[in-house]
Length: 399
Image (cartoon, rainbow, N blue to C red; front, top):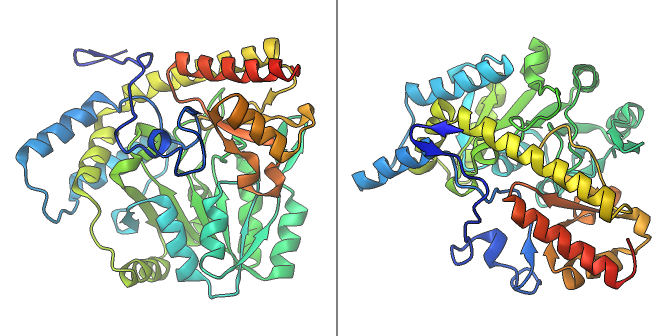
């Protein structure tokens, strides 16, 4: 657990209030009381890797933050990361940098579909997917995942039928899946890809959670599975989830097809965006060049957090079930056995337990009865949250 002379400390609670943190400082603005304990938005309560802080400090001391671009060493860091960890060999002329993955998905929606055309997603899924579709006046089509014995699966028949019936132009893939935690198997990705190829559907693959995979599961880059998939895919990646860098606004988007890349870049230019932030470039390169040891240690800590959560629920709140994640640090909690309405569950979580989670309904109708909890936090914070939820259930005499 060493990097240089530093120990990776994930147990210390770092005060984030008063830092304009969306997670901690905006409860009142989001309709919550200020005393809620937040475990909702997907950033970590851990300091990033020491190597990232060191490189950022060096750049800050330089004192000039003019227009900045990346050179070959930046690409080599990104290229090396995806080659070493996923066996995916990217080319420099595929890369387009954006301030975020959601920004890139929205740009792809505008670049590759027209108003009124259909875009398909698989709910319950990361809620900005539906927002960027409807906000851009496209038709949202849902092919819901199926929950069977605590495990989510793709309904391939429904997926294909929706594509045919609605004349779907674009599919937004979440891989690994947020919030249900699936890491798709090769056969699942290939089957999705073959259907998309058959009907001329382009794929936007959000792979931002790819570095968090558990229990022997393996993340496969969708575009890497065949040259044909590569030609129809916009692959969205970022160091933000992996190294807790969301506020630095840096994502790496890969598009192998020259014409698709041209259209995508044109859409970005049309909104007046050019260079990403200098600190974002510095942090991404530093993380990919020297942050792997830190990542492996934080992953161990987060998995232990899940085991703690799972054990706590089983012993003390057995009517709440955690869907065992194959990937991500966002855990999908099944509250349905409590037989509460959406309003009753919201009252339990927010007003009685004083927790700020993400209600499952935010992820689509198929998420009703669930809550998403972020466990990338010190264990004492997670324990406090579970204690508060247990106490609230005890007051209702429900366990």
